[in-house]
Image (cartoon, rainbow, N blue to C red):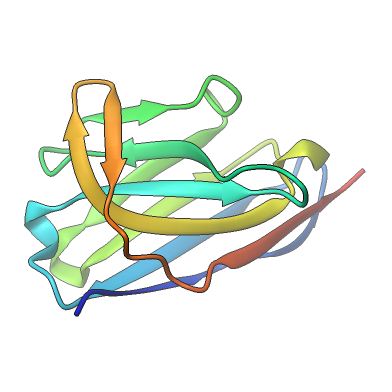
Length: 121
């Protein structure tokens, strides 16, 4: 059974930075594409960024140039470095395994508990 544990969220002022981590167990991590999602109150969950097994990356327009996704296969961990944070980045952030196909990412049904990111103005 695949398990995902997100961490690294917190409260930060606008313009600040956070780095999220997601540790994956129960799968061959290096074979997986990985995605980061977020869900703000009253909104649908949205894809923020994903990274293929070959480390090709793709970002939502709203975070391009500010967020960076990376992976460490030796640690079975995917990261999301978030810089120049804005109040509209406030959400619960989730990672997931999935399948990357060009600019598309299809998530598996393996959701962790998420980590809360709150950006104050």
